[in-house]
Structures are given as C-alpha cells and as structure tokens.
Length: 318
Length: 266
Image 1 (cartoon, rainbow over the protein chains, first blue to last red):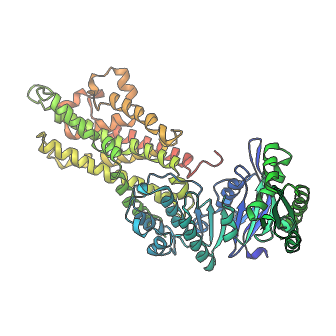
Image 2: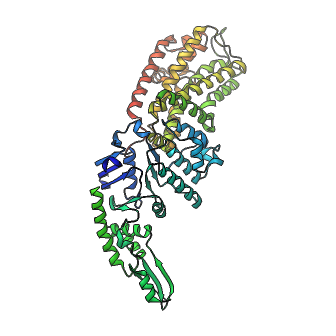
Image 3: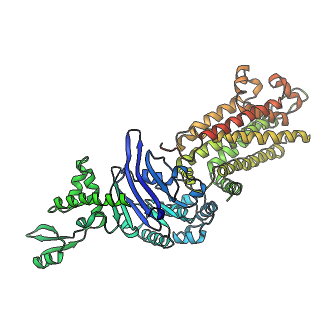
C-alpha cells in the first residue's frame, strides 16, 4: 500500500510559537487518486498543504511526497509537482501565452501551451496581459500554470474561488481529464459539491486534527447519511430521520410540503465540524445543531462521534 | 533543463516586463537623462573648469549621470523589483517550480546589464548629438569606461538584490529604497560637484561604491586638468576597482545568506 502512496503523512505536527496549527494529522493519497482536504478557515488545511509543497517546515511527524521529504525536495522533485496556490497577486505584465510558454520551459516534459490554454478556456484572452484579466480569468491562469509541467501530483488550494458556475463546470472537466491521465490530486475547497464531484476520498480537518477520513460516499458514516423526511402537520414543520423513508411516506399519506432529503456532503461536513467545536466554541455548535434536524440531534451527534473514531482508526491502519 | 539556458530565457522575460512598467521606465531608465537635460539647460550659460580648459554643463554632468544610471538601473531597480516580487507572490510561485535560483539571478543581472547599456547609450547619444559634448578619442578611455561600467552595474545589481530583503512589504519598498539612493547621489558627486563637499563628507561618501563609480566615469569623460579636484588629486582607478570589488563581494555574501524564495514560517 505504502509504495502506491504518492503522499504519506503520519502524525504531522506544526506549531507557530505556542499555537498548534496541526496536531497529529495522518493520511495518505494513493497514486491516481483525487483527495479532498476539507475544513473551516484556520483549521490547519493550508499549513498541511504548504508543508507537503515544501513551503513550510513541520514541527513533528513524518511526511513523504512522491517518496521525498518535502524539506529536502530538489529541483527534480519539484518538476513532478504542480502547485496552484491559494492566492496570487502578481503584477502580470505578460500575456497569458507568454507566461505559459515561459513556465513550460522550466519543465522537462511540459504539456502543449495551446492545449492548456484551451483546457482552461482562455483562447480568446491568450494575447491579453494577465493584469488586464478578471479575477476568475487570472485564477484560470494559475490553474494553467499548475498543470503546464505535466505534474504527477497536483496541489489545488481553493482553485475555483471567483469562478462563475460555467467556469467551475469547465474546471471540473479539466480535473476529470487530468485524473483520467493518472494525475494524483490534492484538493482543498470550500465548495462541498465540488469535493463531492471530483474526489475519491476526503479528510476533514478541524482544530488541527483529522476528524473524519474516508471515501467521499462514506465519510461521516452511514448514520450521518440517514435520509430526512420533512412535512407540514397543522402548519408546523415536522421531520424525522429514517432508513426507510418510503415506509414513512406511505404512512403519512399526502401531507403538505413533503420532502425526502438525503444529507449532502455539506450537511455531513457541517455536522462533523460542529462536533469538534462543541467543546470550545458554543456559537458554532449552536449553528450546526440547527442545520441538523431538531428531532434527531442527539442521534446524529452520537452517530458521527462514533464514526469519527472508526474512520480515524481506518486511517491509521492504512 | 540547464541553468544557463533558463537564465537566458529569464533575461528575455525580465527585459520585456521591465519596459512594460511605465513608472520603472521613467524613474529608473529615463531619470538620469532627465537630470542631464535639466542641468544642461539650467547652467547653459556657465562653463566649468580651469581657464582655457572650460567645458559645458552637459559635459561636466555627464559622468555623474552615467554613474547615477548604474545605481538606479542596478541597486534601485533590483531592490524595489525583488521586494515587490517577494510580496506579490511571484517568488513563492517560482519556489514551487523547478526554476533554479541561479537562473533567476542570471535573469535579473541580465536585465540590469541590458537596460543599463541602453540607458548609458541613450545618455551618450543625447550628450553627443543634442548637447555637443566631445567624446574621448583615446581607446584606453573607452576600455576604462567598459570595465567601470560592467563592474559598477554588477556591483550595484548585486547590492540591490541584497537590499531587497530590507523592505517589509512591496508597498514600502519605494519608500525604503529611494531615500538611500537619493542621499547617495547627493553625497557622491552626481548632482553636486564632489570637490565642493567638505572633506569629512567626502570621506564618508568614500565608504560607499557610488562615489567610486562617479570618479571612474569622471576619469573617462573629463579633461585631465580636472584630476587635481579629486581626493589626493588623483583619479585613483585602482581605488575604484578595489572599492567596487569589495562591495560586490559583500553583496554576494549577503545575498547568499539572506535570499530565499519565501521566508518560511513568517
């Protein structure tokens, strides 16, 4: 298993002075896999990804990226990586084409500039100076620069921020085609639908710890995915979580406002992240409790707590 | 991919982006030309030098403006440029690619050489054809010009790279760097005639490389009768080489110790 892992992180710690940003995170990414790292701002995602990219040194634990410790990564190692950073603000006094052609020259086996420009949908803008592009278009240039070197492993740190819905769909197609070519991808995003669309597995970080880890269809555990049936009874909203929604609906007959809802990745994520903050931040936990249905708060929280342990164990065993 | 070929590709990229930035072109590239013009026009009725050896204001200020060009194209340009690249994420992006640091430096030094040569050529052409300044006819003078230019601009560029670590952000880069270069220009015989300065200030200015670059340029372009106005009444070309050489080594060491694509954990 280890030999097939392009990324292997064990018990990673990162401290800034007295502040612990990453507190014992472990996970792996297998070759060809798209792995989503999810979590609220300040949870330790960016620290983790920057340690993997070689931008930061870790305080403890072990990290291997394409078989190399990122703190010792040389230029040959960097040639196999593609990095799309979270934010960029370069002055951009070059055209899209000039920039891509220039960066392609850094790599031993780059993709064709024309193909990459087409893949990110910037054919019309290829002769425009980058500083004259819109925010979303500049972000596409970032993505293009990340893939121009034909990376084995691609880091995408919130890649679609500022994209309109159409650009986002187009980006998803690009990622699927990279995946089809065998590129391994580490993705962070605040769009949970994006993570659900693109990734094979996901890890949820909160408070510097990995609170859930697993397949994108399993994360959070079966209990968190129990459908919710919602209806109006005498003008009052009622809801119930049940593994047999059909039977419940049959029993209810034809009430007003009938809905059967399967919790989305976003619902499950908010449940997980809410769990972690219950102890520390009252405000956040109240918010997430409201998101999860009122009637079953108790059941959901116990369910996912158990499940966190289960998936964490699974993660450690890998 | 080899370091030199990538360095060459960087030079092309650097020069292209340099001329696309209007403010740099003005404050770095055209500034000495602007001042040469102002001084030549303002002092057009005056002449400089001993009786029988008088020269025009343009001829008198040309060496200082050439030296200022070395400082601006090298030190000021590099320090501000790299401080900006540090803060706007350019360097962080390079840090994530297989671009060798040395290729990046070749690109920077190359950009300084190319723009510095164009700047000096422009100054010389305007001095010669607009202000009718006589150019040296002795090939030895041009050899001196060549080595003072190359040594001066390289030293200046390397010191600029070293100084780019000083500004805390790209926004403050101009405010931190320009006062340094401005003061140096005033005390090193660029805008004010060096021989006018009190001895203690001359000695202080001699600690920095600009005074020596200007002195080397004066040796090339001023008549021999001006030599008595120099410190110790000598052009002291070996001193020019030694002072610039020492600062070059200092700049290389500071750069080697301080330059990083990014400051980890800042």
